[in-house]
Image (tube, rainbow, N blue to C red; front, side, top):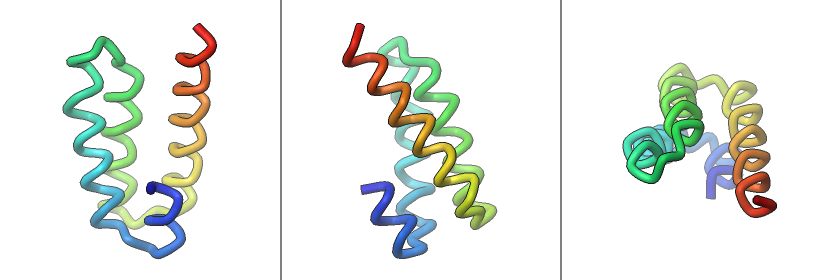
Length: 69
């Protein structure tokens, strides 16, 4: 969903998803998800696609590591 939002330059959706990740990550003990969510939210507000793409990659890598654990 994030990748599609980036492709469509849908910064409002990216900001909303970032905000939700920021708010819920810590509740599950996933502080990295909260950190990345906060950064995604800010990057969406700044309309910074390059940073958003990099943060999505970080998030995907983090989730992949969770699956391996």
